Image (cartoon, rainbow, N blue to C red; front, top):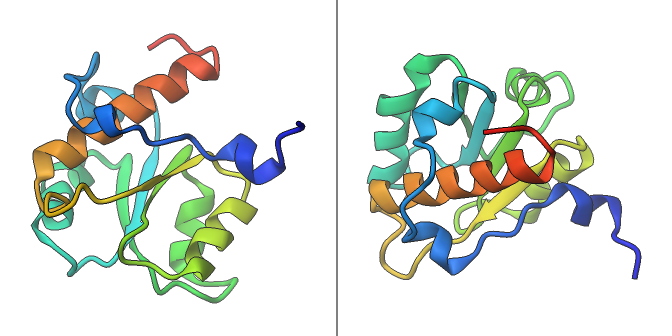
Length: 141
């Protein structure tokens, strides 16, 4: 079966991504990739912790899930990213579909029941997913 364009751009999130120690830390990966996290900024401690820890790198941006208009600054910021994480537990289908239509590789971060607020697990999953993405694209990590 031929993959659709959306399937080609979506990187699977595996349960072990949250728990397996990453080969490279997220700050190390952000030296090579520009990444966005689409979600509700007020949704939890993990998102706030990511913002405080990573947004100063310049290669990581948290974008609120309510972006809608074509000329919206958040949508323009998304277009400049190499990879997008979508917090699947706190956004509607519209932003997820809009991200997939941009053709940017993305992954839907699914909350570990009761644990999405754990910033370390979220960062671990993001590191593992981005590391796998680099290898799938043939880029050396």
